[in-house]
Length: 113
Image 1: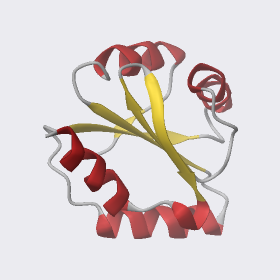
Image 2 (image 1 turned 180 degrees about the horizontal axis):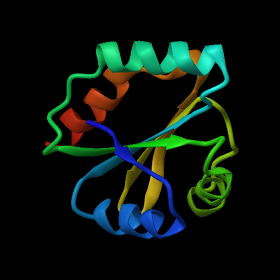
Image 3 (image 1 turned 60 degrees about the horizontal axis):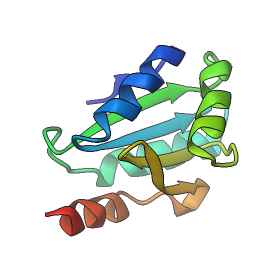
Image 4 (image 1 turned 45 degrees about the horizontal axis):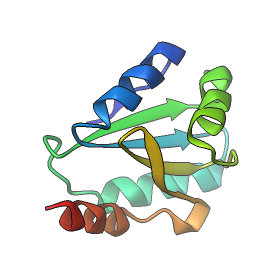
């Protein structure tokens, strides 16, 4: 249930929406086998109700300016693949490569309850 992330204006929406519920951003390089494997594993393990979290997918090769702005706006060094968790307009967690883990995202939701 990915929402595509393709414009800079969507980052404003993400920041605003993150005050109501968690927002996840998955930055993916479509030319990278490591990124493809990380995405596949994450999707296989991800079982979170979409009413509790918004999940955005960024094809960073086609939308490089959005990827760069994510790094600037949320103060994280660019990685690929990369997962960010946004809450109240701030990145509260980020991981890249083999550290991307759907269970970690689920644990953040449990803490919020």
